[in-house]
Length: 367
Image (cartoon, rainbow, N blue to C red; front, top):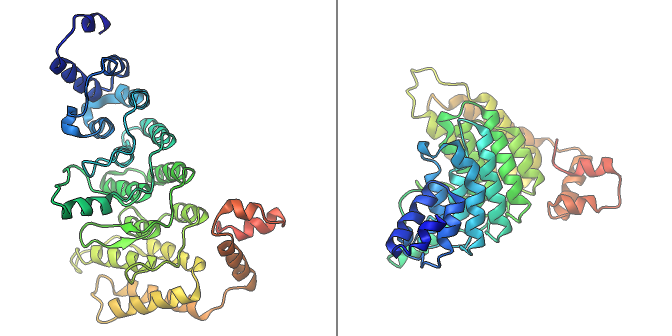
């Protein structure tokens, strides 16, 4: 490469070589080519190099060697000052394009290379709370069309959960999905991701919600996982938030019932009761007022003449919500939840309290 560059190739040849180096994840070659000082603004039609690299990595021909080189290529782009906050064209924000392609189903070892890149982008200043969906709508109103290829996202964690959901039909292991969500979300939360950010959770009818609302929707597709729920709660997710007239349980019920109704009542369906009961455990982390509203909304929308596919679930959800509404939590639990709220749902603030480790453990929402 060094020898060939001494022969002074044309700018078009260098641009073509850069295209190949990015698509084949060749860090040394890319470093030399970018060092020529060529203007890269129009390469890939103005789309940032990160988006191109990560999107192409999902192609089957990319190979395990390509996965292993992703962090090195990312390092080259960072060294050459490629902007990790590049938001135009829309739907190409580097961090979200990376996460969208980061779950390697064939071999989870390869997923680790993507997670390493996530950390590199975050350290370089990528914003895990950038509302790409809002930005896309702004540009659409101005007449700017979006790049086709992936959805826009309201935060990195919204993107993460939607990514797992999109792989739901091909996942061999729910444990794999759980591990991926927790590992990636942990990186994001340690880099100031807002666990309570409100954003778009589905493009079909522009439903809005927090990360927990997005998790409820995703759980209908991949199954309800208590480890992920508890992780989000420990990170400060607020189960009492109502967005556009919907609490977390309402979103879960809406999505589940819609999915159940897609199947004829005469056909046997998978038993979703375990998922329903696990989701309802969130009630232990909700205030009575929020539970009362959740029940009211649920009954208004689903209790009248439920279809045969959902009738049994309507009864169970109503009964469980009514139970939590009528039975007062133990004083110790109420005090722990009050302190957790007083500490702004931040574990670091709890650890600073002048009390024993045992009490701190009971304050944190981990049970």
